[in-house]
Image (cartoon, rainbow, N blue to C red; front, side, top):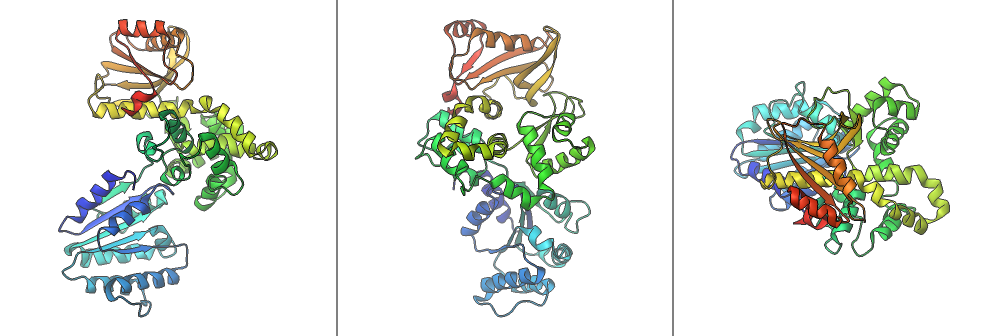
Length: 462
């Protein structure tokens, strides 16, 4: 299994405890939660039950079968109630440590919310004094946060650990494609993001173009309609959500812009955006270093594949059908440098965070992210791809990210220096450039003279 060492170590640490442990695991669909739990369960004897979208009695029947096979090696009959099933586990649990894993718990507790209270009763009266481990896992992030961990949940206060399983970063994603060049590894990440299920679809036996053609554009391909399918599973009114996601992918990132683009009320759009944030598809951001209440708030897609899919596939389905799979893939490939701009900024941000952890930056950032705002030097709006402040805001790091084939010219260097003049002269300033195409000789000479760091794609993998 690629990655997830930290997640597995956290679960193992809880397993090693002699006390009752209760872990709540959550994360968006396809992110690899089940794989982590299967890996953990493969190394320990565990009751592993995956709930399904069935009625309550069928879930109870399946759960009964799983529990009885674990303890008795045979299925006798369904328990009459969930109380009976949980009590049976208590009675059967003796000297041996028992691990109970319930995957997709919302499918179980959704049809029968009283299951949460039954678990609470068993924990309070029996399990809290037993050498037992309970893991509840779910893809409905809002359900797991509000209905399981929330203050009003019957299980509130019983949980001993929580884990949000997040997508891989660019370095972890690169391990899926050992035969790709570093540039192609970044392209794959820029297209697919860090969701393991999506990363597994591409093959480094094929070029990026061929993968786009065969694994995304081709009719019937798994990724051809994946975002649409997931939205239908997760949300009501997927049409409105589709419109919002497409608008953001096209660059409309303020509430008023999104509302005008899709011809919906601003208040309605705000509510839908809150839901999209809850399921981890959209993020609300403000300029780095500014308050979350800043009026400069914008919305961005957190998932690279959704941004790719809504920018290319969703908007051009009929056109691509007429153009044909191969020519469509060529057209997309030729525009990838422009598309990669936002993804490359995120990659560079991840790189800087990794360097900070190694203490390889001038300081450890207290804040890091994109910045935009008014620049009095040019009397116009300006931006910085990645900005980082130290804790006291006495030092700032400016980073420019370029994913183009040509060597970076002097005017790009000057642009970042001018953008830095939006900040006080009393702040100590550091500059980093990261360019796919390298740098012109004048830029290299100036950077050396001024102590500015110039990096290439290969440096991101060192």
